[in-house]
Image 1 (cartoon, protein in one colour):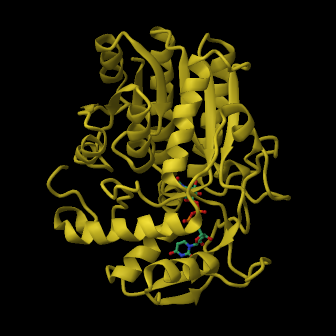
Image 2 (image 1 turned 30 degrees about the vertical axis):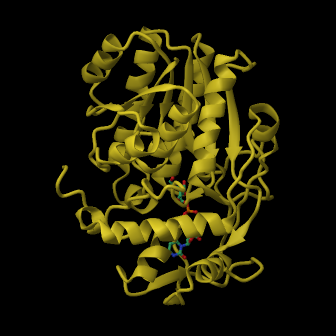
Image 3 (image 1 turned 180 degrees about the horizontal axis):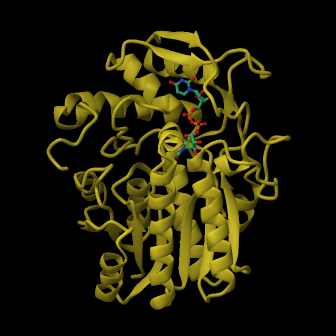
Length: 351
Ligand code: WQD
């Protein structure tokens, strides 16, 4: 059974990926310092898969502690690296914290990959590397634009670091550019747990609908799109998760042909903010309380993916539609409310 190390495995996409990896026969270990996540997420993973996943509560910015994990696990065949700060707005206020955390952790990890000759490395990247594209849908060859936030620069710089590292090592790397991951695992035993007030659209919608926040704001309806609101490629987190399993299987089967390969993970369907709100109202039966406010600085006007490469090379197909994304997100929000330990948006019992 191939052992895969997942960093940030107590996080949103990381935990869903661990479920998918285990469901496809992999052994998984997790590294997560739980500064912005809860180890209780792995209880949900265990309920779904029946497997107890060991978490190393380690800060990847500490090289010695990171190195020790590899000394203890000589049989790691692949790494999937999620651990990073990811709040666009926070990165604008605290750029050095983002550059230090997201890049130092990556460099430490790659130094261990080199030291222990780990053959396969998958990096959690983002469509944010495209900035405001001139043409949509974007392909993997669409030239990156200047990032609109320090968070976006950490993804662009992360990709460059990995590209250069892969040329000088035997490690094969895959960069997965997520569009907008939303929703929760169909079991509703794991899902997104934003800490504090939600920056992203779907948690803002579900928290407004459940009354956790009184009203949400649509940041602008005067954009050059079909209804004036921004356009995105929302994709179910479980579809994103399965792409990671396929990427690892692709590399273990020796199919990768370049030092580093890039794949877009989007549905290929563009949906506007207002369309997402309408779809949510339809699946939930809740009339959403929102107002139209000013544009949010740094927002990309419109972007969605051409996902042909991931389909052709990884054999990846998305199985969840927009209504599945929103209905699972809504059911998860309702579960969070029923489980008061987490509902206040902090993990008070665990940090
Ligand atoms: C989507 C749209 C908002 C909240 C970012 C990162 C990306 C990834 C996901 C980490 C925008 C609008 C939102 C609200 C709103 N990050 N919106 N009211 O900005 O596309 O992507 O988060 O994994 O890398 O770039 O996602 O959900 O924040 O915003 O109107 O209360 O929803 O203006 O148009 P975004 P988002």
